[in-house]
Image (cartoon, rainbow, N blue to C red; front, side, top):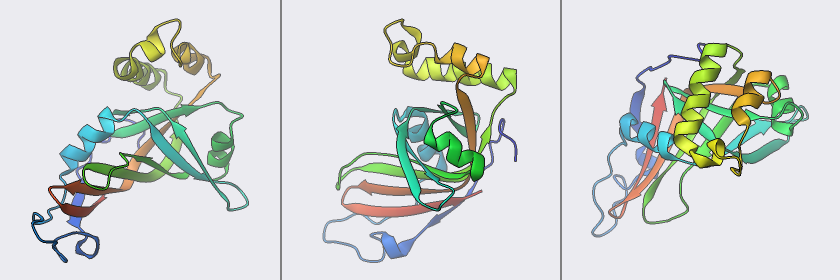
Length: 185
């Protein structure tokens, strides 16, 4: 599976078991599937993601990361000695989750796929630029939380992973309607 340039269009399906379309509440709008274009916009805007990986003994590991949506792929980084890097070396399957914490509005997203290490210098530079454009001073300013990440990625001191979606889910809340959308790639 490519780690770059994957702009596949998924099939989109509303899961009526978990959507208001099957069990409408008084005053609720009819539930409709969320378009993949809207999910992509949310993935591009989200600042914090939670990455879930599996330890070699089967226990889960969940931790927050910053990530950039670029060219149809979600990218995140980690140190080579961090637990998520160790887990991914054993099993590349993971999920990245983002969204809000409101019961009445928003779109929560889950992207499932296989994390693949990125070593291509051209892709590294594109993703560094995407990180800088998205996170601005957090990366570009000397006092930024993640300042120096670009150089650390270039030197290999920090690992970059690409997750091309295999399946993604959207859990939406708007106008009193709840939606559960599945995108299959």
